[in-house]
Amino acid sequence: MPHLSRFIVVSLTGVFLIPPCGAQNSSQTLLQRRISVEHQVSSASQYINTVALTARIPSGVESYLPECGKEAEHEFPNFTGTITAALDKVSSGTDSYTWKEEHGTLLVQGANRKPSVLDIVVKSFSFRPNEPVLKTSGNLFSLPEVLQYMTAQGLTQWGPEIGFAQFKKKNKKPEAKVTLNNVSVREALEAIASAGHPKVWFYTESSCNRKRSFSLNWTLK
Image (cartoon, rainbow, N blue to C red):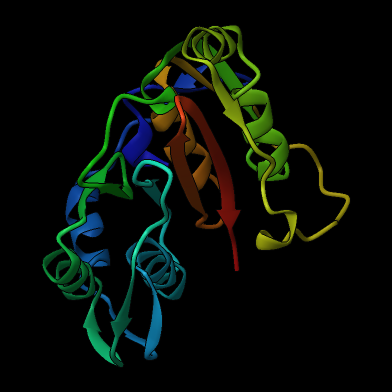
């Protein structure tokens, strides 16, 4: 995971990962991969999720719903082109999402993004790349810094859609732990998404009658 070397330590070996030459160029080339997406009527965030899954690249999508409302649906025609072109088309067509490459992953955020639990910095977090991501992210959101923020903000979490993620139940040999120090929850999710096979996380936050809640789902192929 060369793009994550800014904050990753492989704890069982005690070495820092050094990105090889040309790593940034390889990330840029990745988004020039051509994909085909069939016509669909959906929210912009769901369409972006389809793009990320079709491309099979580690990604994160943040959706912030309007007060007591839901995200509008749009019609997206058949598309064939680069990943970049698909994202640009969604951004310009709905004017509701922005995207960028960050730490070797694709990060897509609602234009109405606000401070959230994803911005909270945790002192230390460790995980094994071959663990189920629901377990890993559950441990992340159970850290004291995260729970303290949720309590102070009156923020509640509703459960993930278990069927949305597909896990292969195999008795694998435990992999070396990845330890992250002084990172935001968002950066930790990016690290999880990049570990092993590419994964996509989907964060949704809503508020209604002064009550705020969020969910975190993983979409995997």
